[in-house]
Length: 357
Image (cartoon, rainbow, N blue to C red; front, side, top):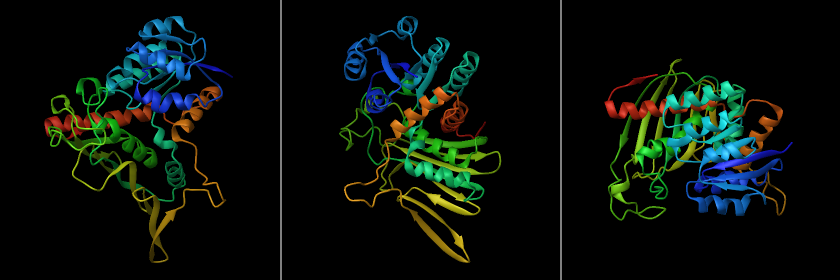
């Protein structure tokens, strides 16, 4: 089975994740490229497309004129819902990059469109496909941790503010590190807990370092006048069953305790964390233990046993779900809950009050 695939948005996330992965999926033919900056689409075609692939600056024109099976939406957050719904209504399956949408109402509209059209929809949370994430999920599914009643979702950078594109533009993105990288940590945590019923959230956002001039930064100094999103954000989530989650996120924070797209879990039988590799901790025969999981499968000369790239595993899993007509690993209803919680934290930060979901 061959899938004719188009990508809308040929910027950083398309070239850094989606296109290199899709190029390695046998069943995929990249036949459509769309970007407001036409040169980006042309370059993407040259690097990854079929010889007869077409290039567009208008997504409506592409959806109307190219025979497609699947569309990948890789644009700023503000346009996720519009483009996803249009692609679904044009009879295509859709993978939309994270986060699902700027608002929960937009996310709900995306789900409604998928149900109406009967097409599949998934969201790009590739961290689920890491070796440590997969192993820990199996541990949680088996009930080895017992009831997980407290968790932490970690997304802390010391100084790594993305200074390109529209990352610093609140209108285009809906927020800063919380919606950008906090979304990955929260998705992992909810997935491990298998708990998608939040009751209320309390949160705060900060603009403490964003106005620093000539700041030290992984991608060079940012322009303070253009830094309209938060530089850090923190939230506390209470679930319907009483479980609680602490979510921490930052692009710029005076902390050496940096970790991104990681989770810590506390259950009635055992706990787990990804802070220094993957470890499981608990009590056995009246003694405490801390078990470090060996994630590599090496041991043979000249072979380190490295796993496939999570983006490639994500792509392969997505196209297998379409071919076999099964549910994708990342269900849109799960991604909706992530968006609802993030939206609640932003709202709580503005009002100073808890937000009930």
